[in-house]
Length: 149
Image (cartoon, rainbow, N blue to C red):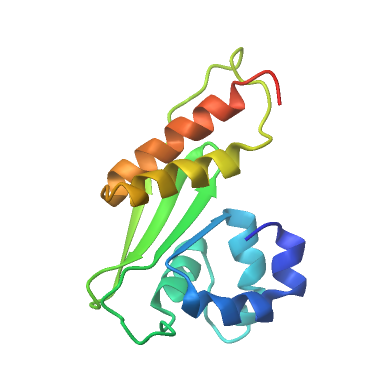
């Protein structure tokens, strides 16, 4: 989703693209910023309801049997993945983030990009969601421990 201010100012445009997506990545603040306009309608009060709302959005191709994954990173708190489940609803899962020793933590730049890369790598190799998240968490862990660019 890029950044909270992008979600606030261009939320309506982002929402027009979501029916064409299979996977959406972002952090908790970005999703909550995107959902600000829906709070007045009683929707999207917490991050789980935002994830469910986005996962349930109709697909542009009408093929609701295809899965959509809404992936929410929350720093050192558990990662949330909301996935449509065979057209019967949305399954929200939480995956614990393995701790990084404070001496090993260098910087957080690029951790989200590395996370997305790991998740997509898993999807490309037809891995299940659990394995995709584990690959994503590993890539993010390596990214925050790197010294160079």
